[in-house]
Length: 533
Image 1 (cartoon, rainbow, N blue to C red):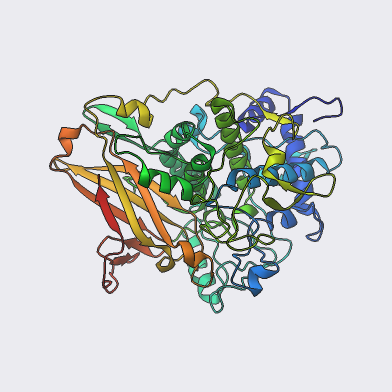
Image 2 (image 1 turned 90 degrees about the horizontal axis):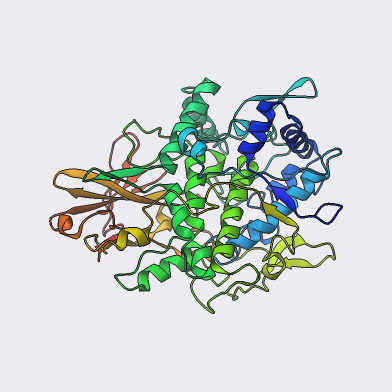
């Protein structure tokens, strides 16, 4: 809240841009001033961007690199604390921005990812243009990249320290690569990035990729049906309870157990993951243009994503969708966690964070380390349920406020009697065999026409074999509904799944086709199982 006790408003970044162009330059200029300020603070200052960004993943601290019981970062992914932990994380970043002189009223805007402008043009220009005029001087745009003020070292990968970054390293996005942890990485990255010398062209390629992710669609019998990230955000608002809304682990169990005539639940974490990989280096599946192999942007890996400033504008939108779901479903002042359900244990998905005991159950009273409130007590989810009453902020107008223009929600499609109730289910995929983040893309061929039905993004690590608790939940599952198709049209359909990794495409029969087109030795068993039911 501000000095008068009024709730502060987080606005759409596009609104600030429009005001700037119209002549009211102060809101966007102050935002730039605040970001410039925290990026220039000494890395040991707890309000510096380096220190705050380092809370999410790298640099590892404490048990994060000395004990494989922990994965290293404080962030929560794949469990029920995912929305609330990131909510408080944004609050602390916002408080740091407001600590810069003259920026006391600055609020963190959100990138409205489902707006008409984003669906058409991609990322707001304030996040991508190279420079900005501030106080009559041309400065490096602090919303575009961050130049590391201290090195970070990867203590997990041994001889192949993928996440290490030297002081002076500048974050990158698609189509560039930022792997510089070893001499081999540096050589490969230099060779790759030399292909993309134009900043303007790179922004254009990035926006093309983001637009393809957001607005992916298929045409079935003359009807265009949206299947992209924007539609996932719409569908996640219909999740029936907080547990399955909050994370991919819980939603996977719910989808595996659901009745065959029930729609698939889409968790908030699913479209969140997609945007990470869209910005961080993966082409949208099913695109007609040639994919760019070798793109390894910082947003594409959990350990480094938070060093890219776009991370916070993305997560601000994710938090806004969380708030919209709370208001729509009556959970403004309370959340329901299904006891002892998948996704409610500290070892689920990534493993426990520092300060949380391995194999402990997560509740609304679990600590959201390392964040403390004004009384010095560690935040819990109960402290951040109602953003207006407890945290003193709310969200300004944007997309998804008054329903949606999308008429292709899972429920809407399934309500038509001729639509298929079937689902493609992928299971048995061991992520220990895959280096880094990856995509699970599903395809259906009907009467000779191949359709890209959907993609699930997995935001992972370069090596999970060394993480003791990661080993307990290595199987990755994906569920994609066949509701866009009439049941009778699937009688002679064939189904295909591609797992697109940093190293190439892994097919069901266990062959990994490398980027140069050469296959590896076939595995002794199937790489994953595919079932249609």
